[in-house]
Length: 273
Length: 273
Image 1 (spheres, one colour):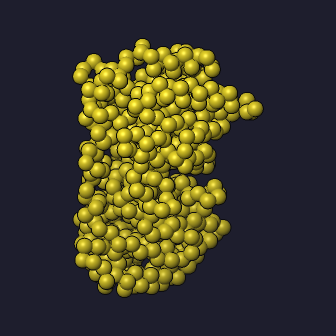
Image 2: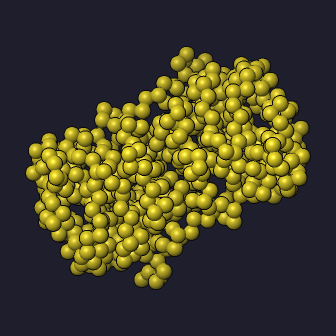
């Protein structure tokens, strides 16, 4: 059992396959159940967790897209109600125009708290998705103030700074990190950026990555949970389907003091930049 | 010998002692000579490299302060002329008001290219220094476009983004990183932030730290040189007096493309932040 002052969070790093949405759905249901049973109050799923990621073309992405009241968000909302948790996961959102959005929802005990459309599109996402036009949501949930962004968004320090200044205690990032060659013994730059985002802003960061080769694309499977100093407290995962757990004292993300003389926010110089 | 397309840079991690300015000076002269002899065209020294750092009080800091045409900057300028190098180092600059500045100079073949006054003050620096009121300089030198900031400045992603957007290829940061407890097997957060600053902006980063216990303060001695992917290519140093060397292909810092679809700068959303 956790201490009452600690909040358990989980990142469910799942196998996702664009050619097996039923399997994706079953894996989400099973993983969320396990995470909740182990005490997680906030559970983070990967980007595009039911639809899969590697769409053949715009037509396929449109065909897989759903409105916010469609089956994927309904499933996530129902799971959050069933387990009494905050759940964050990505889905392919039907857009007003031709293109869908690479979106996520934050649901809490059956309530839809936020929909967010990825604003920084990676790689061939630019061929199939429209980019969102709003900054990441910062929402008061039953476990604290949660900000949610998607994968490549987290690599822009402006994004993390923005949500931290708006009061986020935990920044979650459903992700699909494609595998690229890295230097032996070194963490992938995405992980280093996640760590730095946490440390710079003194917020907790939860990256939920995915695994499973998909139409020839490989993934890092490097989910990581960082504390407010930027240190990984769970992960980086090693490329397998796994759920990471961590316990946060969320009050630490409200204390921006760095020793007796410094303050992560007050030391900024917005008069200059 | 370096390939003609590669530029050798050096970070001279020196022992500094506020009670031994003559020794500090001698160590600078010797280290710069060795670095230049090994082919370094850009040599970075620590913060407050001649004066030392741990001033007893404002009066002592004032007493150690010098104008830009004082002996420290003259020495650094002369060394840059003698060795035909770009040299960056910190000094205690006499101010217009009561308090000195924690400053640096960029000198190139005997020419003074920039003076910069640290804008983000760390710890008890707030008791003795005035903070600068200008962003870090970005200067065209004989080895490329160099930006220079000091220690804690580098921990503000706004600072690194700003100089990168203004064309910096190499960001140098004379530093005095005080030793604090870190998690076993993990790099200090300062190093992670330096790596992330390089990776986010696709610039080279050279942090020159210092060593030598000084009036009871210990230092990390963790100088590090990062490539444009954020990987350390020299260091982190292990707390000893040492000079790190690296060879940069500076054209890599001009290419902000990330694969065929992405671009570190063009993918930003300044319409949102």
